Length: 205
Image (cartoon, rainbow, N blue to C red; front, side, top):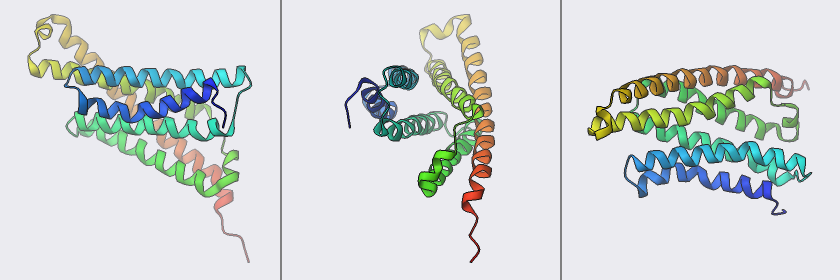
């Protein structure tokens, strides 16, 4: 494995994934919330940058292809788990998150079972839109959570008129995006299953 810049960025993104949760162990809220937003956004940006650099500099590698989806899934799963915990198990968040987590585990297991044949399950534009919706929904939900926390704690700036509007907009935007991501997640999971079915049928003896 060569330590190219794209591979280093991918490893950093993988290491940032648990950091999104661990900041809540080390720091108090709301500092931890803002650090989680920073880590997630930074990791999401590296996801875009490392692929572009690998292709532009012809530094694509098997290590990068293996680790990239693992880092992406770890980042999303850990971030969503933290959000569910901070929301107090809000059903409006828990339901779409449950489907997202189910799909991630299902597709990962499907690809592992198919082995080399999994290369034929190419990423679709629908899957890319699903990822985009997740990457926007997660930081927005973090921000909505910290605004709500400030309100409950009676922070000084909560008295300003724009605080309630900002909390309302962030909260509802986050819910719409996470439900959209959940819907796209179900559709892409079904699409992958349909494409994998020819490889899953038992051969006649």
